Length: 156
Image 1 (cartoon, rainbow, N blue to C red):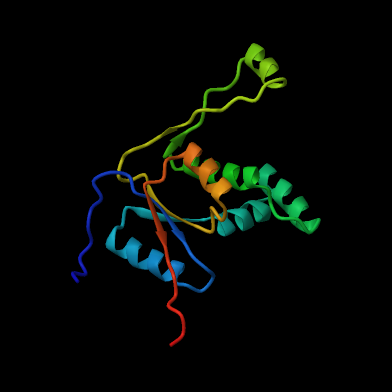
Image 2: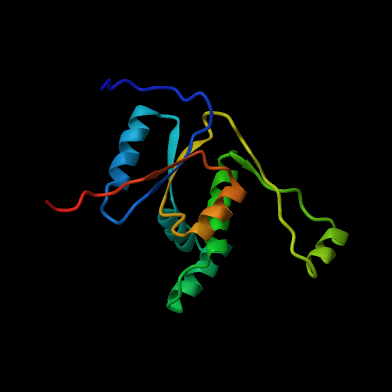
């Protein structure tokens, strides 16, 4: 196998899934060395960084954690969305007008974001999603084009 780096032709949005210790971090490192356009996004790192910086999302997550609960999916999705927006890979939906904001109090709406197809908008997401519902929510936020499920072979 060649050790040269390669260039992506379009955005690669990759999720590595598998049990703890299966090698997701190792494979992420290998892929990033091979494809330097890829960025690693760890939901755990984002969570810890936002708690440390005392951002609004970090404070919300911290209060949930201190209460002994799991951080809700929407908070993790907001952290990931914020990270993707900060890199310019995702454009947030336009702000609601006063009339639209009033309408959302009685109905559920789906916000629309715009994602970049540029090859520099490529990432490997680690630690999220963990459930099918989380995967569906993430795919609504930004389409994922590759999921790799890593398995360890059973002991011989």
